Length: 228
Image (cartoon, rainbow, N blue to C red; front, side, top):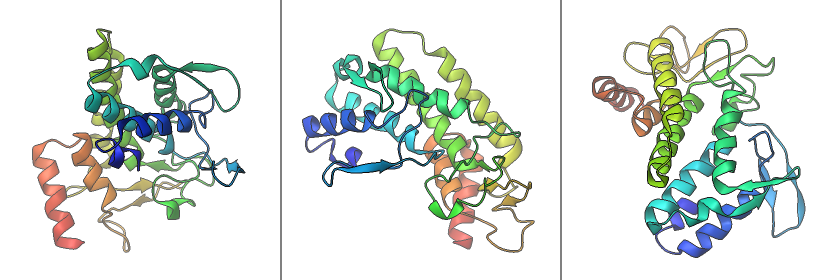
């Protein structure tokens, strides 16, 4: 929602981002819902995607404004202490890396962007391909941010390259990318499954993130148009 407003009101967008950063824990995860208007307690639910949207939003603000000042502003963590905006963003990556599954793909946790996948990781083993693709994009954007700051962001490029290889080795199903892996090893969104053979999010995010090369990206889009 903030990204949609960046070009219209940069100052309001910066203030809302800083508020949302106050909903991030020291471990890099975030609350799932917060209620600043209603003054209700936030809902804490560990998700595999929430924290990564903070990076996309900060990236859009920096690119739109042409300044990096916001990255050095200090913002509290939800559970105590504080850090710069940039430190908050780096904690987001750490949270993903601290929650990697057996196939080297981020754990689904209590769900990702698609709330109905909340049963995939009940035993703590299910993985989200979309979250892996989101991690790739977040790392690439951090590399750009570090370049703007004249800092070495190569560690984030290495993470992006590693996760890209994992996704293409494990999650490519021949004509599209699978969506997730359950606790019990079932690949959701595979041609080998009777139902739900293809899901749109892992195709779109393969392209958004650049984790798909041109050939696979085109195939994934062709499959999306054909089946969805």
